Image 1: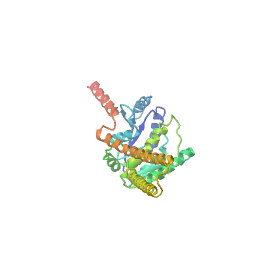
Image 2 (image 1 turned 45 degrees about the vertical axis):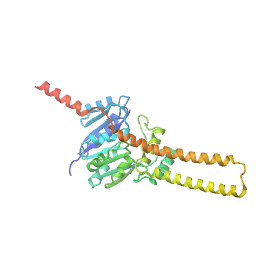
Image 3 (image 1 turned 30 degrees about the vertical axis):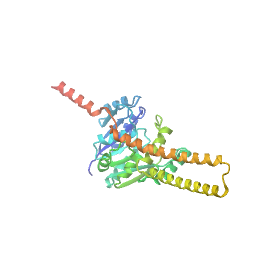
Image 4 (image 1 turned 90 degrees about the horizontal axis):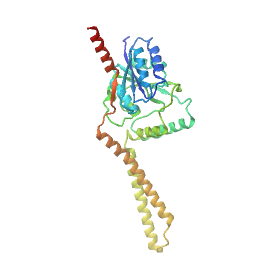
Length: 323
């Protein structure tokens, strides 16, 4: 059996309580399978002691590598950086909070050895609040009716990507990244593994309701222009209804003369058309804003330091001392 080199990419933002636990779990899991590996932590501008914990793990575990951002650029940027810096034959994306069970790693690797480019871990909704599960199902049902790729409830970033899949993702250079859609867009052979939802043991979730809502909007507008087409059809329908109403009113005036103007009819028409216009402008504004961000061509992230720089300096100092 060929020994693989596996890269674990772990985006980390204020996860000081999980780094050592995560590293210990990965080390124990990889000890028995004989594959070489690296664990690449991407510190997304943490404000706690996450980087201190990563440095401590680097001293204890030689497999640890890290990339540290100058500030918080978001999880999408952290995933992209991890894919760019990962050196493995295959890359396993995992969260640092241990909600992605390390016990599934052998199954992910086995799927890769079977020839799959993406081996996806899909969780159920056990333990989630009922209202959250309901909203999640409604979101995935609605978004799959509009976008050009398929998103599946329970499938997230926890997955193994072959080198071919990683290289394919790195060819997609858009600034507004939505990884769930990108995984589906590149296609390639996929295998899905189901697992039970795991509750977070240390720390708190970094996803607020506002962030989840923004993430949902990203999913809708990143992979289709159907909302713009909807604006067109809504405007067209409103125009025909307005013409029909004006024609009906004109004929009625010609037959029966002018009555007292109806306040309710007037205000209803104004509010309806005003609402359609504001909604349409909001949708158009989302796309225009994304075009604006893309034209600036700013980098997805800025790196403060990496473990390679630190290890290089240590090796240089050791060489000087020995000479």
